[in-house]
View 1 (cartoon, rainbow, N blue to C red):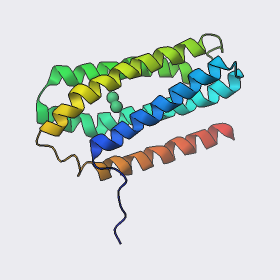
View 2: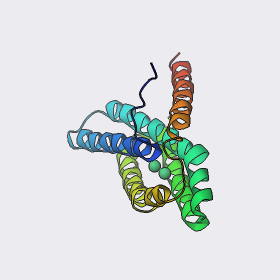
View 3: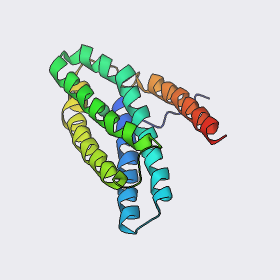
Length: 164
Ligand SMILES: [Fe+2]
Ligand SMILES: [Fe+2]
């Protein structure tokens, strides 16, 4: 029997990522509010950064190039890439073990706000245009899932290495 894919199409899959990461940002804010230990917050921060890095890579490798080709709006897609680049700068700071605990909470909050804006733009402009364009969004789901599995394996292997 063919395995059922849990997502309607590429947009549905990517937006599920958005929701999952938003939940992690909310959890992080709750930890800050509750005065949780820095180590607990760092652990969640690493998960947020890993999820965002993987998500951005999926979009940049598979989704964005096809959308760019279909809608022909280079300015829009370049702007999205710039937003990814800005997020990656903060992520680099957050994943560095050299970054002191002080200031981390503020940086996570800043990243969360940046991602909120970016997701809004994806949902209200890029996703809508992708759905209107002659794009096989359903057909894109499986390549996205496969690439995500690959990236997850790589990331897990890397964290196992670091833990060893
Ligand atoms: Fe994005
Ligand atoms: Fe996204």
